[in-house]
Image (cartoon, rainbow, N blue to C red; front, top):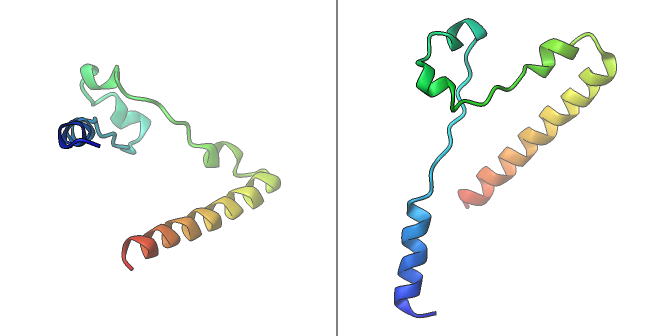
Length: 80
């Protein structure tokens, strides 16, 4: 690959937009400026909705455990 093409790829990667996830309550949502709210994505709190369902709780616990294992694995790979 020629150097100019490689530099162009590097520049394109550095111009990519980053996304951030911010958690706040429904009440706080209305304190945020409307310009920001129109671009925001709403994610419902599934745990509160299904916390009384035993099947959901078992699956959620397994999900959290798997997620922790994955995060630990990725951390170990980055810091070897």
